[in-house]
Image (cartoon, one colour):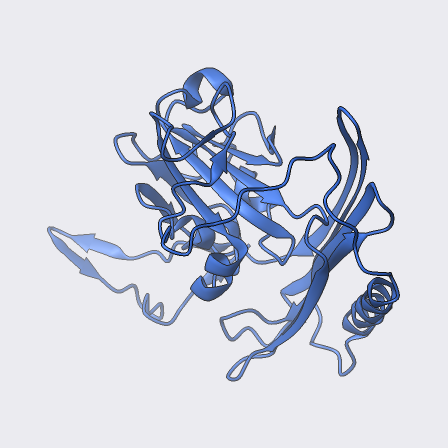
Length: 300
């Protein structure tokens, strides 16, 4: 570990890529109407605040709306995630009713479960975490190698679908409690965004970006990710957060369907916060000499 450098070269590179992608997207002509090969999405009812008419395909045999589904389903869109201020996959799940997500260990290694199922120390033993319908890990309780450590929340997330119990146990492994599926954007809606986050009372800087749109009548793309560097939320005086994520996909539509090629590169270093030892005297918790559990912390 080294001290935070004065210049943030990775951020500069990411900013250049963002501006280049945005300039390329603005140079495109107006996007044509949605082709017949891909049915247009039904218009959302302004009074449908619970999003009950949203199509859900995670953990079910056929695509159906939340209103017509017989299982317990919750969905989050990108606007809801942004308003929640969540910066990790575990924090995103806190906004879903019925899911317990403990992110006390930092960016990853979170304990997660669904109501009615026991929680396991160091992971999600009964909850399957997916990205675009593919499992991140077949088992979610690997010590210090949990599924949420390989999932980063950024601007590429379009929707989060969560199915609690019901048909989830028959649709995937390690899923008797449920399935959480992080669905990425695919360029169906043109445009993009970029944002820079800087810590006020700690050394931390993060650049997020995403942009997508159509390259042709039946071709669309999406690219996004983040780059960050800093000491994290706790005062360490060294660089413990350094890295980022880059994701992109290219979709070619046909009369009977589509083919999509996806790419993901995750190279992110974040600390794991370990428990602080204390002494138990009868029913009283006592502080060890020189170790204040209110301020001390251990990182891995």
